[in-house]
Length: 139
Image (tube, rainbow, N blue to C red; front, side, top):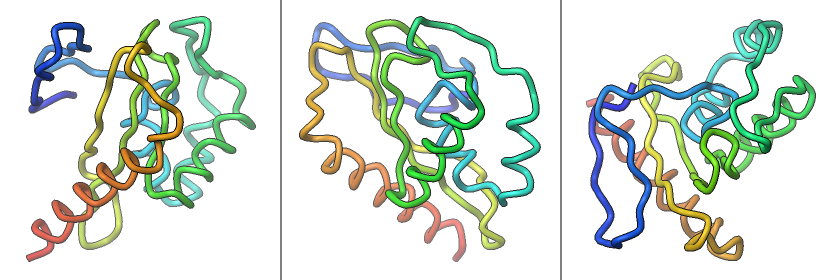
């Protein structure tokens, strides 16, 4: 569930109302959450049916597992119009002292502003922000 947002200064932007929720398998925030779960919990999640929300939504458990393992390696997850058509996002998990996910940080943008070459830069931004929140939470 979305609890806070900072709106873009661009006239064409993505928008989610406070309180909105998204799927774990089709959003950057959700995949980041899954990446922070212990493997046994993630495997349990993959056993549930996954709904198809856009033509880009991935519902194959093996493909989701590959994305989540890549997110674990990178420290951030990517959504390429899998949750909403025309919207791409990058997210990273905030974890508690036990390493369990408690929140996520993500950025989203319209397809028109998404530049694949900038994914590592944006990924570093969300990863570092999530880590800073994690560090503050642990104090």
